[in-house]
Length: 324
Image (cartoon, rainbow, N blue to C red; front, side, top):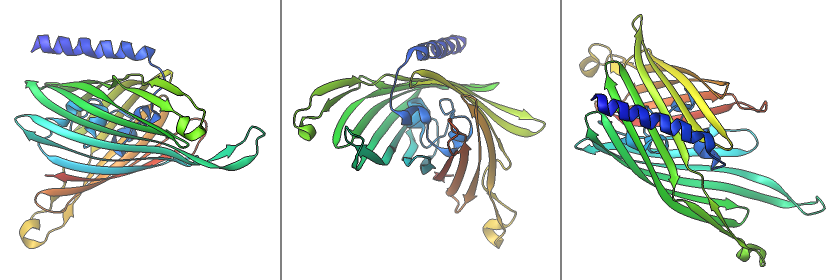
Protein backbone atom coordinates (compact mmCIF):
# COMPACT_ATOMS: atom_id res chain seq x y z
CA UNK A 1 0.00 0.00 0.00
CA UNK A 2 2.78 2.44 0.94
CA UNK A 3 4.62 1.62 -2.29
CA UNK A 4 1.53 2.38 -4.36
CA UNK A 5 1.02 5.66 -2.50
CA UNK A 6 4.65 6.71 -3.10
CA UNK A 7 4.41 5.85 -6.81
CA UNK A 8 1.19 7.85 -7.06
CA UNK A 9 2.77 10.90 -5.44
CA UNK A 10 5.73 10.60 -7.81
CA UNK A 11 3.47 10.50 -10.87
CA UNK A 12 1.57 13.51 -9.53
CA UNK A 13 4.79 15.54 -9.14
CA UNK A 14 6.04 14.53 -12.60
CA UNK A 15 2.80 15.68 -14.22
CA UNK A 16 2.93 19.03 -12.43
CA UNK A 17 6.47 19.68 -13.61
CA UNK A 18 5.81 18.57 -17.17
CA UNK A 19 2.93 21.02 -17.33
CA UNK A 20 5.34 23.92 -17.01
CA UNK A 21 6.44 23.65 -20.64
CA UNK A 22 3.27 23.21 -22.67
CA UNK A 23 2.08 25.26 -25.63
CA UNK A 24 -1.15 26.27 -27.35
CA UNK A 25 -3.97 23.76 -27.68
CA UNK A 26 -7.74 23.58 -27.99
CA UNK A 27 -9.19 26.19 -25.65
CA UNK A 28 -12.10 23.93 -24.71
CA UNK A 29 -9.64 21.55 -23.07
CA UNK A 30 -8.24 24.07 -20.62
CA UNK A 31 -11.41 26.14 -20.19
CA UNK A 32 -13.17 23.07 -18.81
CA UNK A 33 -16.75 21.83 -18.92
CA UNK A 34 -19.47 21.06 -16.39
CA UNK A 35 -21.14 23.37 -13.89
CA UNK A 36 -19.94 21.35 -10.90
CA UNK A 37 -16.25 21.40 -11.77
CA UNK A 38 -16.25 24.97 -13.07
CA UNK A 39 -17.95 26.25 -9.92
CA UNK A 40 -15.10 24.60 -8.00
CA UNK A 41 -12.32 26.31 -9.95
CA UNK A 42 -12.23 23.87 -12.89
CA UNK A 43 -11.07 21.01 -10.65
CA UNK A 44 -12.13 17.67 -12.11
CA UNK A 45 -9.07 15.43 -12.23
CA UNK A 46 -9.54 13.78 -8.84
CA UNK A 47 -13.35 13.82 -8.53
CA UNK A 48 -14.96 10.39 -8.60
CA UNK A 49 -18.44 10.08 -10.10
CA UNK A 50 -18.48 12.75 -12.82
CA UNK A 51 -20.62 11.79 -15.83
CA UNK A 52 -18.06 13.69 -17.95
CA UNK A 53 -15.05 12.07 -16.26
CA UNK A 54 -13.68 10.98 -19.66
CA UNK A 55 -12.96 14.67 -20.37
CA UNK A 56 -10.91 15.28 -17.21
CA UNK A 57 -9.46 11.89 -16.34
CA UNK A 58 -10.15 8.55 -18.10
CA UNK A 59 -9.38 6.65 -14.88
CA UNK A 60 -12.36 8.22 -13.10
CA UNK A 61 -14.98 6.41 -15.20
CA UNK A 62 -14.52 3.27 -13.10
CA UNK A 63 -15.56 2.82 -9.45
CA UNK A 64 -18.80 4.70 -10.11
CA UNK A 65 -21.25 1.93 -9.25
CA UNK A 66 -23.98 3.55 -11.31
CA UNK A 67 -24.98 4.88 -14.72
CA UNK A 68 -25.33 8.60 -15.36
CA UNK A 69 -25.69 10.96 -18.27
CA UNK A 70 -25.47 14.73 -18.50
CA UNK A 71 -25.45 17.70 -20.82
CA UNK A 72 -24.62 21.33 -20.35
CA UNK A 73 -24.25 24.71 -21.98
CA UNK A 74 -22.05 27.69 -21.25
CA UNK A 75 -23.35 31.18 -21.92
CA UNK A 76 -20.31 33.14 -23.10
CA UNK A 77 -19.57 36.67 -24.25
CA UNK A 78 -18.36 37.58 -27.77
CA UNK A 79 -20.73 35.14 -29.57
CA UNK A 80 -18.79 32.12 -28.29
CA UNK A 81 -20.48 28.75 -27.79
CA UNK A 82 -19.42 25.78 -25.68
CA UNK A 83 -21.62 22.83 -24.78
CA UNK A 84 -21.29 19.12 -24.09
CA UNK A 85 -23.12 15.79 -23.74
CA UNK A 86 -21.79 12.75 -21.89
CA UNK A 87 -22.47 9.46 -20.15
CA UNK A 88 -20.49 7.13 -17.89
CA UNK A 89 -21.13 3.86 -16.15
CA UNK A 90 -19.46 1.06 -14.27
CA UNK A 91 -19.87 -2.13 -16.30
CA UNK A 92 -18.50 -5.06 -14.25
CA UNK A 93 -15.59 -6.18 -12.13
CA UNK A 94 -14.52 -2.65 -11.16
CA UNK A 95 -14.38 -1.54 -14.79
CA UNK A 96 -16.16 1.44 -16.32
CA UNK A 97 -16.67 3.30 -19.58
CA UNK A 98 -17.46 6.90 -20.46
CA UNK A 99 -17.89 9.11 -23.50
CA UNK A 100 -18.05 12.90 -23.76
CA UNK A 101 -18.72 15.12 -26.77
CA UNK A 102 -17.76 18.79 -26.59
CA UNK A 103 -18.45 21.53 -29.12
CA UNK A 104 -17.00 25.04 -29.11
CA UNK A 105 -17.36 27.69 -31.78
CA UNK A 106 -17.44 31.37 -32.62
CA UNK A 107 -20.17 32.44 -35.03
CA UNK A 108 -20.59 35.41 -37.35
CA UNK A 109 -16.98 36.62 -37.27
CA UNK A 110 -16.58 39.58 -39.62
CA UNK A 111 -14.61 38.79 -42.80
CA UNK A 112 -12.77 41.71 -44.37
CA UNK A 113 -10.57 42.08 -47.44
CA UNK A 114 -7.04 43.48 -47.56
CA UNK A 115 -8.49 47.03 -47.62
CA UNK A 116 -10.56 46.38 -44.50
CA UNK A 117 -13.88 46.23 -46.34
CA UNK A 118 -16.50 43.89 -44.87
CA UNK A 119 -17.55 41.18 -47.34
CA UNK A 120 -19.30 38.63 -45.12
CA UNK A 121 -19.03 36.52 -41.99
CA UNK A 122 -17.29 33.26 -41.17
CA UNK A 123 -17.72 30.58 -38.51
CA UNK A 124 -14.95 28.77 -36.65
CA UNK A 125 -15.55 25.67 -34.57
CA UNK A 126 -14.09 22.64 -32.80
CA UNK A 127 -15.63 19.28 -31.93
CA UNK A 128 -14.03 16.71 -29.67
CA UNK A 129 -15.06 13.22 -28.58
CA UNK A 130 -13.43 11.55 -25.57
CA UNK A 131 -14.05 7.82 -25.04
CA UNK A 132 -12.53 6.19 -21.96
CA UNK A 133 -12.23 2.76 -20.39
CA UNK A 134 -10.85 2.23 -16.88
CA UNK A 135 -10.43 -0.56 -14.39
CA UNK A 136 -9.37 -1.02 -10.79
CA UNK A 137 -6.09 -2.91 -11.14
CA UNK A 138 -5.16 -2.80 -7.45
CA UNK A 139 -7.23 -1.86 -4.46
CA UNK A 140 -8.32 1.76 -4.96
CA UNK A 141 -5.86 2.25 -7.83
CA UNK A 142 -7.66 2.90 -11.12
CA UNK A 143 -5.97 3.19 -14.49
CA UNK A 144 -7.76 4.38 -17.61
CA UNK A 145 -7.10 4.85 -21.31
CA UNK A 146 -9.08 6.73 -23.91
CA UNK A 147 -9.52 7.28 -27.61
CA UNK A 148 -9.89 10.90 -28.68
CA UNK A 149 -11.20 12.41 -31.89
CA UNK A 150 -10.89 16.11 -32.67
CA UNK A 151 -12.23 18.05 -35.65
CA UNK A 152 -11.38 21.68 -36.25
CA UNK A 153 -12.70 24.13 -38.84
CA UNK A 154 -11.57 27.64 -39.72
CA UNK A 155 -13.79 29.31 -42.26
CA UNK A 156 -14.34 26.57 -44.89
CA UNK A 157 -11.17 24.64 -44.17
CA UNK A 158 -11.57 21.59 -41.92
CA UNK A 159 -9.26 18.94 -40.53
CA UNK A 160 -9.46 16.14 -38.00
CA UNK A 161 -7.25 13.77 -36.05
CA UNK A 162 -7.47 10.87 -33.61
CA UNK A 163 -5.23 9.93 -30.72
CA UNK A 164 -5.11 8.70 -27.17
CA UNK A 165 -5.43 9.75 -23.56
CA UNK A 166 -4.40 8.08 -20.31
CA UNK A 167 -5.09 8.62 -16.64
CA UNK A 168 -4.75 7.25 -13.15
CA UNK A 169 -6.62 7.71 -9.88
CA UNK A 170 -5.78 6.47 -6.39
CA UNK A 171 -7.98 6.74 -3.32
CA UNK A 172 -7.06 6.61 0.35
CA UNK A 173 -9.77 5.76 2.85
CA UNK A 174 -8.24 7.31 5.97
CA UNK A 175 -7.90 10.19 5.41
CA UNK A 176 -10.29 10.30 2.44
CA UNK A 177 -7.92 11.61 -0.23
CA UNK A 178 -8.04 10.99 -3.99
CA UNK A 179 -5.10 11.76 -6.26
CA UNK A 180 -5.46 11.84 -10.05
CA UNK A 181 -3.43 12.63 -13.15
CA UNK A 182 -4.17 12.50 -16.88
CA UNK A 183 -2.64 13.22 -20.28
CA UNK A 184 -4.57 14.04 -23.47
CA UNK A 185 -3.74 14.59 -27.13
CA UNK A 186 -1.17 11.81 -27.31
CA UNK A 187 0.02 11.15 -30.89
CA UNK A 188 -2.36 13.73 -32.36
CA UNK A 189 -1.50 15.85 -35.39
CA UNK A 190 -3.70 18.06 -37.56
CA UNK A 191 -3.02 18.42 -41.27
CA UNK A 192 -4.47 21.55 -42.85
CA UNK A 193 -5.08 21.59 -46.61
CA UNK A 194 -6.41 24.84 -48.07
CA UNK A 195 -6.09 23.85 -51.74
CA UNK A 196 -9.76 23.01 -52.15
CA UNK A 197 -10.82 26.38 -50.73
CA UNK A 198 -8.26 28.86 -52.05
CA UNK A 199 -7.24 27.01 -55.20
CA UNK A 200 -3.56 27.76 -54.61
CA UNK A 201 -3.30 26.93 -50.96
CA UNK A 202 -0.83 24.76 -49.13
CA UNK A 203 -0.64 21.87 -46.68
CA UNK A 204 0.61 22.51 -43.16
CA UNK A 205 0.87 20.20 -40.17
CA UNK A 206 0.06 21.12 -36.59
CA UNK A 207 1.06 18.97 -33.63
CA UNK A 208 -1.46 19.22 -30.82
CA UNK A 209 0.44 19.80 -27.57
CA UNK A 210 -0.18 17.23 -24.86
CA UNK A 211 -2.62 18.44 -22.21
CA UNK A 212 -1.54 17.42 -18.72
CA UNK A 213 -3.65 17.61 -15.59
CA UNK A 214 -2.97 16.65 -12.00
CA UNK A 215 -5.22 17.03 -9.01
CA UNK A 216 -6.21 15.96 -5.53
CA UNK A 217 -9.42 15.97 -3.52
CA UNK A 218 -10.08 15.64 0.20
CA UNK A 219 -13.28 14.71 2.01
CA UNK A 220 -13.54 16.38 5.41
CA UNK A 221 -16.10 17.07 8.12
CA UNK A 222 -16.04 20.42 9.89
CA UNK A 223 -18.42 20.61 12.85
CA UNK A 224 -20.75 18.10 11.15
CA UNK A 225 -20.55 20.06 7.89
CA UNK A 226 -19.34 17.78 5.07
CA UNK A 227 -16.72 19.40 2.83
CA UNK A 228 -15.22 18.24 -0.46
CA UNK A 229 -12.01 20.18 -1.17
CA UNK A 230 -10.31 19.93 -4.58
CA UNK A 231 -7.19 21.29 -6.26
CA UNK A 232 -6.00 20.96 -9.88
CA UNK A 233 -3.12 22.17 -12.04
CA UNK A 234 -3.08 21.94 -15.83
CA UNK A 235 -1.51 23.48 -18.92
CA UNK A 236 -3.20 25.52 -21.64
CA UNK A 237 -2.10 28.21 -24.04
CA UNK A 238 1.34 29.38 -22.96
CA UNK A 239 0.50 29.23 -19.25
CA UNK A 240 0.09 26.85 -16.37
CA UNK A 241 -3.33 27.09 -14.76
CA UNK A 242 -4.46 26.23 -11.26
CA UNK A 243 -7.79 25.77 -9.55
CA UNK A 244 -9.04 25.38 -5.98
CA UNK A 245 -12.58 24.54 -4.99
CA UNK A 246 -14.89 23.35 -2.24
CA UNK A 247 -18.44 22.05 -2.03
CA UNK A 248 -20.73 21.25 0.86
CA UNK A 249 -23.86 19.14 0.81
CA UNK A 250 -26.94 20.35 2.65
CA UNK A 251 -28.55 16.93 2.27
CA UNK A 252 -26.37 13.90 1.53
CA UNK A 253 -28.59 12.54 -1.24
CA UNK A 254 -32.08 12.89 -2.71
CA UNK A 255 -34.39 11.33 -0.15
CA UNK A 256 -37.96 11.29 1.01
CA UNK A 257 -39.75 12.31 4.14
CA UNK A 258 -41.23 9.48 6.24
CA UNK A 259 -44.13 7.77 4.50
CA UNK A 260 -43.23 9.10 1.06
CA UNK A 261 -43.18 5.73 -0.67
CA UNK A 262 -46.51 4.64 0.73
CA UNK A 263 -48.40 7.71 1.89
CA UNK A 264 -47.37 10.43 -0.51
CA UNK A 265 -44.92 12.33 1.67
CA UNK A 266 -42.79 15.12 0.22
CA UNK A 267 -39.62 14.44 -1.76
CA UNK A 268 -36.68 16.33 -0.23
CA UNK A 269 -34.03 17.29 -2.80
CA UNK A 270 -30.30 17.23 -2.23
CA UNK A 271 -28.78 20.71 -2.23
CA UNK A 272 -25.08 21.33 -2.83
CA UNK A 273 -23.25 24.67 -2.57
CA UNK A 274 -19.90 25.27 -4.31
CA UNK A 275 -17.17 27.88 -4.61
CA UNK A 276 -13.73 28.13 -6.13
CA UNK A 277 -10.94 30.11 -7.69
CA UNK A 278 -9.03 29.51 -10.93
CA UNK A 279 -6.08 31.65 -11.99
CA UNK A 280 -7.14 34.29 -9.49
CA UNK A 281 -10.73 34.50 -10.78
CA UNK A 282 -13.58 33.47 -8.51
CA UNK A 283 -16.42 31.09 -9.30
CA UNK A 284 -19.43 29.71 -7.50
CA UNK A 285 -22.57 27.71 -7.98
CA UNK A 286 -25.08 25.25 -6.66
CA UNK A 287 -26.68 21.94 -7.52
CA UNK A 288 -30.04 20.45 -6.69
CA UNK A 289 -31.02 16.81 -7.18
CA UNK A 290 -34.51 15.33 -7.13
CA UNK A 291 -35.45 11.71 -6.62
CA UNK A 292 -38.05 10.96 -9.29
CA UNK A 293 -38.27 7.19 -8.75
CA UNK A 294 -36.68 4.42 -6.72
CA UNK A 295 -33.84 4.16 -9.25
CA UNK A 296 -33.50 7.61 -10.83
CA UNK A 297 -32.62 11.15 -9.79
CA UNK A 298 -32.48 14.30 -11.89
CA UNK A 299 -30.00 17.05 -11.14
CA UNK A 300 -29.63 20.68 -12.17
CA UNK A 301 -26.26 22.36 -11.67
CA UNK A 302 -25.46 26.04 -12.09
CA UNK A 303 -22.15 27.89 -12.03
CA UNK A 304 -20.94 31.43 -12.59
CA UNK A 305 -17.30 32.02 -13.51
CA UNK A 306 -15.56 35.37 -13.65
CA UNK A 307 -13.91 35.99 -17.02
CA UNK A 308 -10.68 37.84 -17.70
CA UNK A 309 -10.41 41.17 -19.54
CA UNK A 310 -13.61 42.42 -17.84
CA UNK A 311 -15.82 40.22 -20.03
CA UNK A 312 -19.30 39.25 -18.91
CA UNK A 313 -19.05 36.30 -16.49
CA UNK A 314 -19.67 32.81 -17.81
CA UNK A 315 -22.96 31.18 -16.80
CA UNK A 316 -23.11 27.39 -16.97
CA UNK A 317 -26.18 25.16 -16.65
CA UNK A 318 -26.12 21.34 -16.65
CA UNK A 319 -28.84 18.73 -16.56
CA UNK A 320 -27.99 15.23 -15.35
CA UNK A 321 -29.71 11.88 -14.86
CA UNK A 322 -28.29 9.43 -12.32
CA UNK A 323 -29.21 5.89 -11.44
CA UNK A 324 -29.60 5.59 -7.66
